[in-house]
Image 1 (cartoon, rainbow, N blue to C red):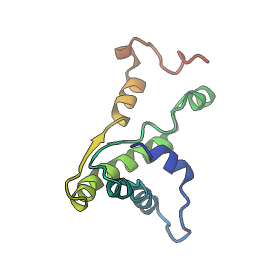
Image 2: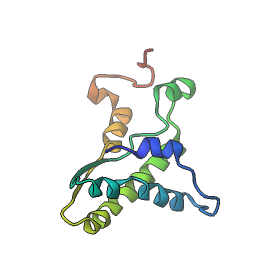
Image 3: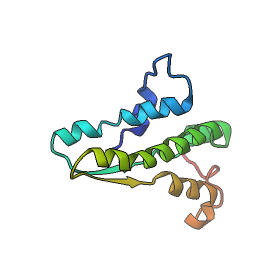
Image 4: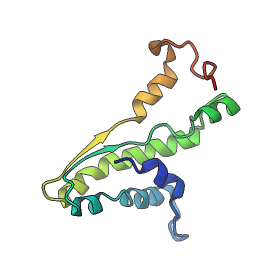
Length: 126
């Protein structure tokens, strides 16, 4: 189940939810795990967000990743991982496994030489 990125794009936050932390709490609640559980699902792979702000077009335009968006994704992932045991406890017989997509992506961007590239930003081709 991967609803983080689409939910992040489409999430409408009520005006009374002021802080980013509160917004992320609302977003994590919107994952929809309970609905799937009610349909009989018991095992869930829950992926983190990847590195927001590092799409090829953003890199080509700015020659760097958006640090603000990277920080938002990192905070979301931190909160999501911490919330999963609570969700699992509330769904008897369920197993929720967090899949970290963020750290490997950061490693590729930070250490392109480990993956056969000298400079990941300049090797983008469209």
